[in-house]
Amino acid sequence: MDLRRLDRGRTKERQGLLLALASAAAFGTNIVSAQIAGQAGLSGPLLVFYRVLLMLALAGGVALAWRASLALKRDERLPVLVFGLATALVGIGYLSSVAFVPVSVAAVVFYTFPILIVLAEPVLTAAPFRVDRLAVALAAFLGIALVVGPDLHGLDPRGLALAMLASISAAAQFFAAARCADTPTLPKLFWSHVVILPVTALVLLATGGFLPPQTFLLAPIAVAITYGGYVVGFLFQILALARVAPGPAGLAFCAEPVFAVIIAAFVLAERLGALQYAGCALVIAAIAINVILEQTRRSTVPA
Image (cartoon, rainbow, N blue to C red; front, side, top):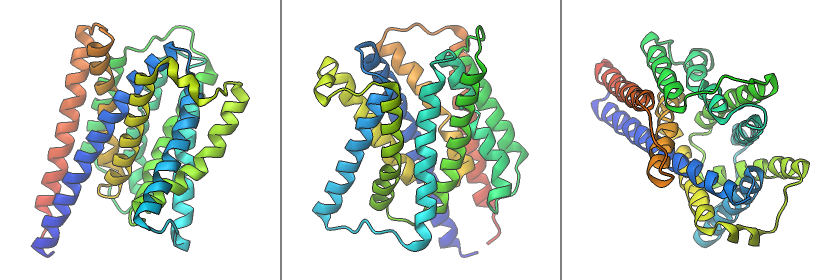
C-alpha cells in the first residue's frame, strides 16, 4: 500500500474520531439545556420540530448564499432517505420512551447502539469482526450504566421497546451515513431534514404540544444553547461519519452522556457519586483504548 495513502487514511480517521468526540460534547450540552427548557414548559417534541425547521433554513440559506447545489445523485438518494428516517426514529423513540420509563433506563437501553454497530459491522460492511472492539464497547456500556445510574423500578415494556427502537435506529443511522459518505454535506443536511420534518410534525400533532415560536422566550438562553448544540453536534456527526467507520465512531459517541453529566454537575449543581466518577473514567478509558487500537491497526497495515 502507498505510504502516503496510508498516512492520509490515518489522518482522516483521526479527524473523524475528533469530530465524533466534538459532536458528542455538543449533544451532551444540548441534553442539559433541553432539560432546562423542559422545566420552563417547552416539550421535547416542540424543541425537535423547530430545530428541524432551523436546520432546513440554515442549510438552504447557506446553499443559496454559496450558490451550492442541493441535488442528490440517483445512487445517493436511498442512503440519505434511510439516514433521515433513522435519525427521525432515534428522536421519536428516545423522547417517547421517557414517558414510560425513567430517563436513566432509557439512556442505558439507548446506548446499546455502539454494541449493535460492532456486532453488525462484519455483516453490513467489509470490516472483520473484532473481539477487542466488542470488549471496548461492553466496557464503555458498563461505564455509561454507572454514569447514569439506572432506576430499575416500575419498568414498562413500552418504554423499553421504544428505547430499543431508538438504539437500533441509531445503529442504522451510522451505517446509512457511511453509505453516503461521499455525498456533499449541505445536500445531506438539507434532504435528511426534509425527511425528518413530517415525522416530527406528526409526533407534535399527536402529542398536542404545538406552540408558537415566541414561547421560546420562556427560556431563551436554554433554547439558544439547545439549538446551537444540535446544529454543531449534527454537523460534526455527519463530518465524522464521512471520515471514520461506524464501529469506532459509535464508540466515540459513548462520551455523550459523560459530557452531559459533567456539564450538569457544573451548570445545575448536580452532585456526582463515586460510581458516576468511576463510570466516567471507564468510558474515557474505553474511548482512549479504542483510539489507540484504531491507530495501531492503521500502522500495522502492510505497505
